[in-house]
Image (cartoon, rainbow, N blue to C red):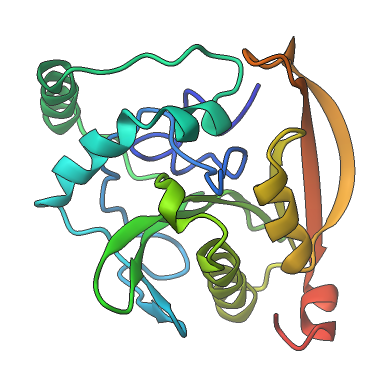
Length: 232
């Protein structure tokens, strides 16, 4: 099953998603993420050159999530096997209210940050999930919903910042990420960050709703490989 679909932390999907990155790798319910304390230390701010990874702050961004939900191109790369369905404001508000009435239990195996430009604009999310301390392994995912942010280097920088934090703040031996065969942007970002392809496996369906071949592609990056690249 596509871990990014129908499950990440946006609310539940930003915790399970690298698989869609258009550059969009995110977000199953596409609601604002819950603020959860992660095992690498919650409320960590990770500064970069053009962006900053920050803890999500509930507030006006709820409107941003509503707009993101209805972006057809992003939804395609996020869930290529599902037809686009526009969500009304009323339906979105009902789902958000229900989520707030029944907040999810903290998940020690995942944590998410929002991606902000240095000018303060919120443009997406990045996260780790499936953290396995015994194996020393975690998966990472990223989501940049708006097409104007694609191809600008934001996804590569965000993923490198997260990898530096994970390999630096934990004893992780390996980080993995995944996407599907038609998501060229996410595949290029993975390669730029030093990931190597591990293998491919069947998706829920053989083709996307646009007729593209649909397989899950998984990548791996070891601690030694990351450090051998000079940490990025």
